[in-house]
Length: 186
Image (cartoon, rainbow, N blue to C red; front, side, top):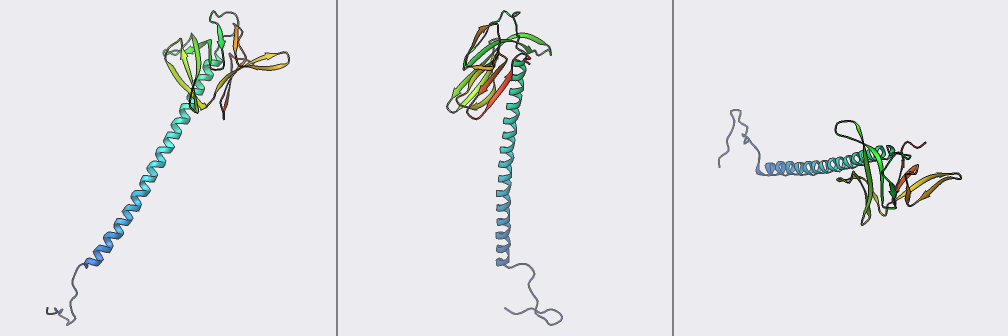
């Protein structure tokens, strides 16, 4: 093939890239895109894990807040016709509950611990209605009832004294204990 010369007499170079240069450029671009895709996938996974952790923490805090409100509003004293009773896995008492209209109404609250495998879930039912999960912890979880006596605080695994309410309720699980003040106890 004859050489082509420019008007100055120097051999003319071909414009463009060789096949080898194009292959190297495509391989580098592909490698960079692959690394970027892997990093993006890791960022999305981290975001999803963080979002799930925030949702779990929010649900636990909201459930605990609702639980504290119901237990703190427990009706104490002899004016109630609703009997207080409880054992290591369930407790039932009279309380004042929030209504959709924004005011408080008398209600019967039942707290029950459901043990499944290595997890315990605390459910609240208002007036024997739908059960709502408000707390989760390690199994086994139990209720304990605190009574104030002459010699200090006494803890029991049952509560069957009719209209006399304990001053505190604990939910004790393997790694966690939640202490709830009952009915504005001081």
